[in-house]
Length: 191
Image (cartoon, rainbow, N blue to C red; front, side, top):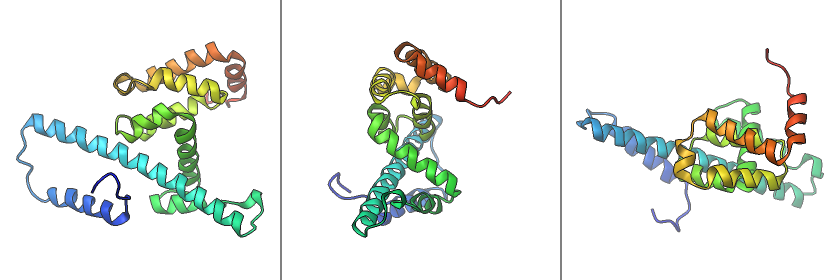
C-alpha cells in the first residue's frame, strides 16, 4: 500500500489478519525483539485510533453536507452520526458522540497533538486529556498550549498524564486565568 492509496476496510482487514495469523505459533523472539514488537504494536494501535477519529470526522462532515443538500434544518443536520460511530466501535451512543467531538477538536484545534497521535506517538487518551484540559480556553490559547506541549513529539510522548495536565493547567492559568477560574467554579465536585 502506498501513501496515495486510500485506506479501505479491506486493507485494514488484511493487516489485521496478518497480525492475527502471527499469533497462532510461538514468537521465537528474544526479549529485545519482544519489546520492539510491543512498541510497534502500540504505535499501530495509536495510529489506528487516530484513523478512526479521522474517518469519524469525515463521516460527520459528509452526513451534514448530505443533510444540507436534502434541506434538513441546520439544528438536525448530522443527527445520528454519533450513534453510527458508536455502533462501528461497539460502544454506547454517548461514547460515539464523545469520539466524534474529540475527532473534530483535535484535528482542527490541536494540530501538534493530532500530528503526534497520527504518528503513533501518543494514545487516544493523551489526545483526550489535551482536548479536555484546554476546553475552557479560546482557540488562540488552545493553539498556543498545543504548540508549547506537543510540538516536540519526543518530549510530548515522554510526558506522564500528570505532567500533561499540569503543563496545560499552568499555561492556561498564565494565558487566561478567568477561564480557568470559571471552569473550576462550574466543575461539579467529586468529593
